[in-house]
Length: 114
Image (cartoon, rainbow, N blue to C red; front, side, top):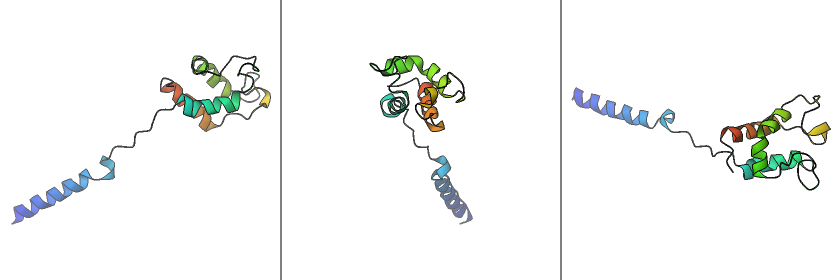
Protein backbone atom coordinates (compact mmCIF):
# COMPACT_ATOMS: atom_id res chain seq x y z
CA UNK A 1 0.00 0.00 0.00
CA UNK A 2 2.81 2.42 0.95
CA UNK A 3 4.73 1.60 -2.23
CA UNK A 4 1.65 2.19 -4.38
CA UNK A 5 1.07 5.57 -2.74
CA UNK A 6 4.71 6.58 -3.34
CA UNK A 7 4.48 5.54 -7.01
CA UNK A 8 1.24 7.50 -7.50
CA UNK A 9 2.70 10.61 -5.82
CA UNK A 10 5.84 10.31 -7.94
CA UNK A 11 3.76 10.13 -11.12
CA UNK A 12 1.70 13.16 -10.07
CA UNK A 13 4.88 15.14 -9.41
CA UNK A 14 6.27 14.13 -12.78
CA UNK A 15 3.10 15.27 -14.60
CA UNK A 16 3.10 18.59 -12.72
CA UNK A 17 6.76 19.26 -13.52
CA UNK A 18 6.28 18.45 -17.21
CA UNK A 19 3.40 20.92 -17.47
CA UNK A 20 5.15 23.64 -15.51
CA UNK A 21 5.46 26.93 -17.46
CA UNK A 22 9.23 26.82 -17.09
CA UNK A 23 9.33 23.69 -19.22
CA UNK A 24 7.40 25.23 -22.10
CA UNK A 25 9.26 26.61 -25.07
CA UNK A 26 9.09 30.36 -25.62
CA UNK A 27 7.14 31.56 -28.62
CA UNK A 28 9.38 32.00 -31.64
CA UNK A 29 9.77 35.64 -32.61
CA UNK A 30 9.77 36.15 -36.38
CA UNK A 31 12.88 37.76 -37.87
CA UNK A 32 12.86 41.44 -38.73
CA UNK A 33 11.64 41.93 -42.28
CA UNK A 34 13.00 44.54 -44.65
CA UNK A 35 9.61 45.17 -46.26
CA UNK A 36 7.54 45.13 -43.08
CA UNK A 37 9.90 46.62 -40.50
CA UNK A 38 12.79 48.48 -42.15
CA UNK A 39 11.13 50.21 -45.12
CA UNK A 40 8.69 52.26 -42.99
CA UNK A 41 11.58 53.60 -40.89
CA UNK A 42 13.70 54.47 -43.94
CA UNK A 43 10.77 56.08 -45.77
CA UNK A 44 9.73 58.16 -42.76
CA UNK A 45 13.22 59.31 -41.85
CA UNK A 46 15.25 59.41 -45.07
CA UNK A 47 12.91 60.94 -47.66
CA UNK A 48 13.31 62.97 -49.79
CA UNK A 49 17.07 63.41 -49.39
CA UNK A 50 17.96 59.74 -49.96
CA UNK A 51 15.18 58.86 -52.42
CA UNK A 52 15.69 59.55 -56.13
CA UNK A 53 14.86 61.51 -58.16
CA UNK A 54 14.57 64.33 -55.60
CA UNK A 55 17.31 63.08 -53.32
CA UNK A 56 20.86 63.93 -54.25
CA UNK A 57 22.46 61.96 -51.40
CA UNK A 58 23.33 58.24 -51.18
CA UNK A 59 20.16 56.48 -52.32
CA UNK A 60 18.41 54.38 -49.67
CA UNK A 61 15.32 53.53 -51.69
CA UNK A 62 16.06 49.85 -52.36
CA UNK A 63 16.82 46.75 -50.34
CA UNK A 64 20.28 46.46 -51.89
CA UNK A 65 21.22 50.06 -51.12
CA UNK A 66 20.02 49.92 -47.51
CA UNK A 67 21.77 46.58 -47.01
CA UNK A 68 25.01 47.95 -48.47
CA UNK A 69 24.93 51.07 -46.27
CA UNK A 70 23.40 49.83 -43.01
CA UNK A 71 26.67 50.32 -41.09
CA UNK A 72 26.82 53.98 -42.13
CA UNK A 73 23.12 54.50 -41.43
CA UNK A 74 23.42 53.06 -37.92
CA UNK A 75 26.59 55.03 -37.24
CA UNK A 76 25.01 58.33 -38.25
CA UNK A 77 21.64 57.93 -36.52
CA UNK A 78 23.43 57.16 -33.23
CA UNK A 79 25.64 60.26 -33.29
CA UNK A 80 24.82 63.17 -30.99
CA UNK A 81 22.32 65.53 -32.62
CA UNK A 82 24.90 68.32 -32.52
CA UNK A 83 27.35 66.32 -34.68
CA UNK A 84 27.55 67.55 -38.28
CA UNK A 85 27.23 63.94 -39.55
CA UNK A 86 24.09 63.17 -37.51
CA UNK A 87 21.12 61.95 -39.52
CA UNK A 88 18.46 63.00 -40.25
CA UNK A 89 20.39 66.10 -41.31
CA UNK A 90 19.82 69.41 -39.53
CA UNK A 91 16.65 68.23 -37.84
CA UNK A 92 14.71 68.10 -41.13
CA UNK A 93 13.07 65.00 -39.68
CA UNK A 94 12.79 63.75 -36.11
CA UNK A 95 15.66 61.63 -34.85
CA UNK A 96 15.09 57.89 -34.90
CA UNK A 97 13.76 56.50 -31.65
CA UNK A 98 15.63 53.93 -29.59
CA UNK A 99 13.08 51.34 -30.78
CA UNK A 100 13.60 52.22 -34.45
CA UNK A 101 17.37 51.96 -34.08
CA UNK A 102 16.91 48.61 -32.32
CA UNK A 103 14.87 47.33 -35.29
CA UNK A 104 17.65 48.30 -37.71
CA UNK A 105 20.30 46.70 -35.49
CA UNK A 106 18.27 43.52 -35.13
CA UNK A 107 17.74 43.37 -38.91
CA UNK A 108 21.49 43.72 -39.41
CA UNK A 109 22.27 41.00 -36.86
CA UNK A 110 19.74 38.67 -38.51
CA UNK A 111 21.61 38.86 -41.83
CA UNK A 112 19.33 41.51 -43.32
CA UNK A 113 16.54 39.33 -44.64
CA UNK A 114 14.27 40.74 -47.27
